Length: 375
Image (cartoon, rainbow, N blue to C red; front, side, top):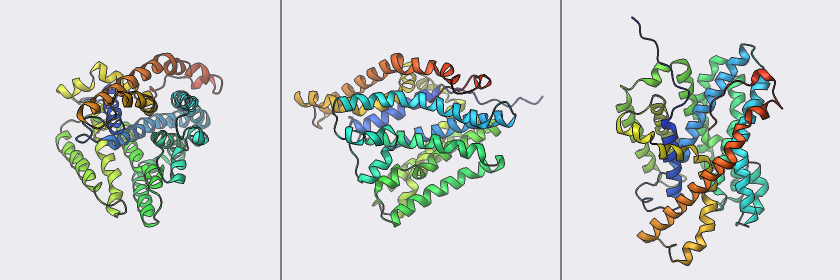
């Protein structure tokens, strides 16, 4: 008797564990944690979030397209509903952090407020050609929002048979864009922090989403994980070696793609779930909770670091000896997690719980169906 094709679950609990590891990698990098010299994976953390967004958002949009193709709704309603959900997830806590930073007069915040509030931080950094410490991490949020604006039109309006070909084309576009930046001697901020420079990360997630919806059996196979995992690890190692090259070396255009491929392997494996001790670790409740509030952690973590610096300096813990590194990292980490937790329970989650009610102000009643959990 033929076995039924296993379905790809809508919610992958181990993704929360991976989210947590990704945001911890960013904190280790920005907080200069005690293990940063051995595990300097901050860029991989951001890359993971981009690939994961490409995966989740592409799945969501493909389902929306199917609905309006079946005349259950219109593309405009689906598009507006998608944008509303995204805005209610990303904007409130982001603007709250900017408001707090502006009130506390953090350096570079007030003079860049137009750029940061409109999710144009990456353009602002390209204009300055340097990275203001207090707002530089917002470049990735700007790229995410620009992705949310661009991606629906790609998924909604390309002929359905063309969508799968658009992802490799976007990967090539990212490589050519980075090569163009090198040959034109454009600022590094434009090359690294522009949406076209990250197309390959989102496209990698899009490929996984397309496979998950069209050939779900491929996403739940476990026999190929060992050799594909070796390939993914080799890609990370090679990308790390390429980072030692001069920035203007053309071989460096492959770094982002190699890292995106490795992060794509993690996302693909988390769809069916890791087994054994690794699966239990990624599903561990405290780790999964950190992943659930990872957006708030990322938004607030520089604010905490700037405000805590005078205290650490006063007690002589702002240096780079072993003890100072540990005290600085763990104090900033736990305060950031605590702040993000309060924000999640008393600010973000109440807003998210009102999404369906708010949607009735903008979209017709038939659109209010159960949706995926926002990332």
